[in-house]
Length: 360
Image 1 (tube, rainbow, N blue to C red):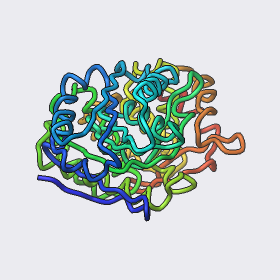
Image 2: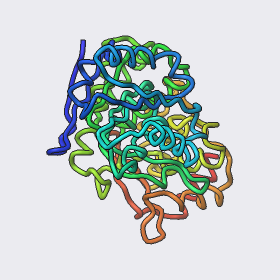
Image 3: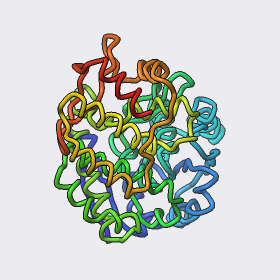
């Protein structure tokens, strides 16, 4: 069983295939290889589970497979780890026709994509995301990059993959926290632009948390459909695409302050989403009843609702390093109802301080 949708970017359009058993299906990958050589980038957690399942069918088809196994965790999404990829590519004399394959979660996808964008000024790459968060969000849309001690994802490039393979079988080995972190990004699509999807999630959240196959397939497909539409309309985040960052400005501050990897990305986004909701309520844009629905759904997904107490000034300082800052003003994604988000710097700064004081 497989479903396919397209990211419509003209000559750079590519398919997202969603289904079961896709990793072992070399026939899905072979048409996208310029030559029969790939470098598979993965990590020490994913490699024992899925590397051979991917590599053997490719080798059986005559493809040379270079294996690059990195340490696991958000703490390694940095320039030192990026150089490990470059080292392996150079030692193996990889050419522009060598395809990089990202096999792992969002960290592996971002690192591999950025390596592909910059090695020999650009080589093709394929995304095979193995976490729910990466399947519904980070593998789609071409955002690549690394973290810096002063800011998350501040160094990177927009660089689209040739293909995305989202194999739902990989979700069976996800720890509970990782699954919940991915569901945070699924819920985000309902909140920013798809109220009907939010309604559906309220009904089906328990089945999604249990990884019911039909529910999981639909949740991934609908999320990718939303993401693909936004990316096609605004590839380089000059407008609508910034709405995908609901909760992220607050969430990135949490990740940075607590240490990358202490809070999972989806956990920080969930807490950040509730901060954004509180400010939206103080602005008169979101009702108490809507906040209660959000709280109930995120709680059912076993996500943290309470942001850590960093102190108001620390939050504001870290948020000033966000990519969406313009003319020195922190721009935030806020809500004017479930299914309707706006990106704005037109909010009351005092109310932002009130939110941070109250929630933390």
